[in-house]
Image (tube, rainbow, N blue to C red):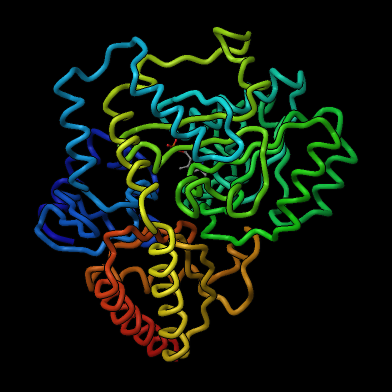
Length: 431
Ligand SMILES: *Cc1c(COP(=O)(O)O)cnc(C)c1O
């Protein structure tokens, strides 16, 4: 790590817990101190010491069009000049809602919030209010933000840091959450057999991206829809990552499954803090002030975030963005497989379109149990070598690799070359 980053991390660590404002950023799992970012452009990042990196974190998903996209920057600037927040309704919010309703198949009405966490927390409150039930089903290794009910067997930083649950979450609350293995219809049927009439909702990442990327069995996703319908429970798709990432209408469009409620975040804010939840009108009208389920936000739908988000969504609707991203994804992820084969290292690469991940294991990775069985030490070594060669990956084996439209074929080729060297050096160390 460079001197500037090291110095900043020391300063940060005295005034910010762990030196970071979100745990995984600290790089503990891969044994590094984090580079501090000074600026970014397209698919590139520069740290405080002037080192250049190819960025595959993309702010953990949002930057699907690359950093500092001129049209998004312009939208933010123009909006800022008209004032940054009014706490009153604006036309931008109407346009945003109309765009979401148009793009996401299941959404008839939508409410804007400020983060993915707020979106899932509010969707669950709504599902509980609407059904009058309390129990919630989630899946091991899925991460839905840090609200109390959702930190049970969670992915992302909770998995990376090996936290079994979090102190501060009341047992009385956690007991309403049932966590089941992903892709396992039998476990699901058992849970509904036992608790059916008490289950308010299933919340699921239809394409999990917080235990690494897991490809869902289509029959599993269909099973979720069937069993919730049968038992009068709400099906919540947490598409905070997959929304606008795998298709304009997210995983629900890709797999043709209509959930009752959908949570959005990340891409929808164009790099500003935004979340949203929406779904069937009949359910959404239960929200205050039309209905009795309460949720509010001082900065919700604020003009800067709406401007950045709208500019992003409008760009995503144009041309063949998703075909292009799909092609780049194939190129990168199959390139990594080839690199590993030539290096004699066993890896499994899971990917859908422009999101994917690499597991150091020989067995297929279809759930959290199998993701955890992958070799974390190998990942750590791979990560460190990649970082030294200027490839910025998420510092955890449980996070996704994201591509943007700014990742050119040339950049991807360069990345695969670096990965080949990194993977070969791993093999040398094992033998
Ligand atoms: C990131 C994420 C969240 C939480 O979003 P924040 O904006 O970090 O609160 C929720 N669900 C999923 C699937 C996510 O990846």
